[in-house]
Image 1 (cartoon, rainbow, N blue to C red):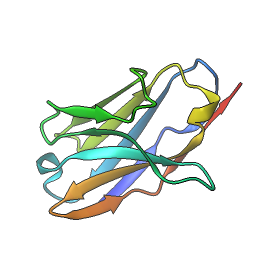
Image 2: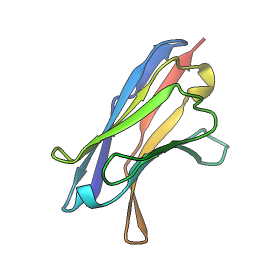
Image 3: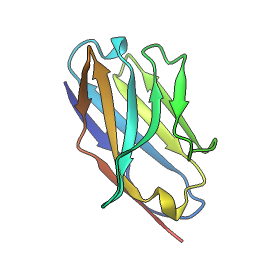
Image 4: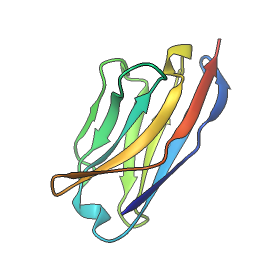
Length: 115
């Protein structure tokens, strides 16, 4: 399984960004997938996750309704739409898929929010 994240960039506070993660390999539709983020010097932080069907989602406490997560099981992709971004959202964002007790990580995409 390989995960390829994209969509990061430099934006201003209040802007939106759409992160995408494309998965290779079989059975994408069977497993939950989500996003974490990491700021240098800090612990990795849970951002969002979505179950195999897309019917159930969860978010980190800091999100406060600003982000949505969705998936396309035909295209094997997951999208994190981030609205009202703040400077504290600056981090490297990683997609992750949980498969049979193992975690598979993508390479990360940098999001920088200027004030």
